[in-house]
Length: 282
Image (cartoon, rainbow, N blue to C red; front, side, top):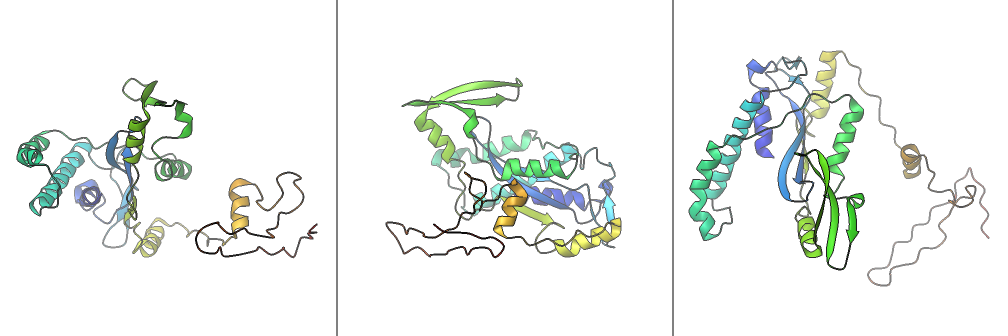
């Protein structure tokens, strides 16, 4: 992820690409393919512009066709990633078997001679598309229930998309192999899979976004309305969580909370009856 950040920022500061300033991006780590194989890669959402040293917003000179040249990005990223890996190797931070250690330099040289591919797409079609894209890679796991077709005592059958053929295929593997594949994509505790860089980073986004809006003549967004948990659920789902799902009239009130059988005593927190509602407890 650090090498991806360095690659993007290097191109953003290069005058020949039209920005010559601080760019911003959201980086998301993704580790799986449709068949759940281990394939770590980074998805990036990058605004097509940045803030120069004078505080002015500069658009990419390509006006939305694509941000930076793909071949040049591919080669720069290859150099940065392999150099970073070699540095880890010299410091003894890579865990290698004796055979891997013996073959390390020949493999590294082959990787330098191989053409790498950094895939770039045109701009999204509006904010809704950005949110949908973010949700797809931030809050989903490697396989959803609807892709699992059958589970027997020994095997699991699931559906996947063969992108080369452009069609849906079915695969059956043992339950043990399925669990091994699934476990590869469980991130370590405390691992951060989403990072913000440049003018979208937490340290500088308030200041930098205000500068960008001023340069673009855009009004600042309205203040965020604080909502209670109930208001948020109603706003996002249209369902009032306090209303009885059966009669659709009465309001459900917590009157008692049973502590767990084991562990520390549960903290009893009872929600009071709203002043605007008359509730009769039978």
